[in-house]
Amino acid sequence: TKILQLLLERCTVEESELNSKDENGATALFLACLNGHKGVVQLLLDHSERIDLNARTKSGRTAFISACENGHKDVVQLLLNHSEPNIDLKTRNIYGWTALMCACGMGQKDVVKLLLNHFKRINLNARSDRGCSAFMFACENGHKDVVQLLLDHSESSIELNSRDVWKKTPFFIACENGHKDVVQLLLDHSERIELNARTECGSTAFMCACAYQQKNVVQLLLDHSDQSIDLNARNNCGE
Image (cartoon, rainbow, N blue to C red; front, side, top):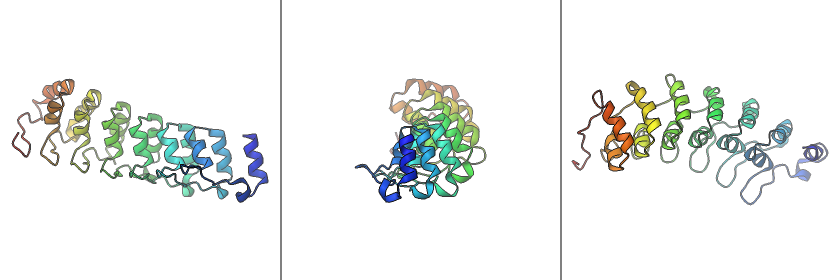
């Protein structure tokens, strides 16, 4: 950090190439955030008037997205503290993923907590190019602690029954992927979950769990079926 401090103090933007990019489009700030170098990030933020804080890589990732998806909570906190109005918290990569989606998809519980503390400045229900929300990504990847965080926060703002481009819900996706613990969490909140929601082809979560031989999930759903799960549903082909 001492060498960086010298460069920042004695060089112009052009001389120090503060915003130069490597072959992947990464800047110095991006790489510092990617690797969780808190001290370096703080130095660069102290000279933020000379730094492009929202520079994008070729994949559309920013320093903020990178810190979130890699779970560097201290760096994320620095960026959040410095973000208004300089850092775009709603930015997306080329696949339409936001920082919150990336953190949820990677199971970065501590980062998700930080982002939820700033929920008024973040679109909690933003959708990716395939229509997935942050809640969907957490369910899809089986990150039950993150799912629990989002459920605890959801009464005011998070959509629990959103659908992707194939009309799959988070509950359907958790069943499809055999994530028993996540399915149990969602069943514990069954009064707020559409358990019999149908996909584009008319399939339900129960049908999908059976088709994919997710035995443990099927048993959970059978145990819950006396209340609300339709065991005799048919898809659009009548199967």
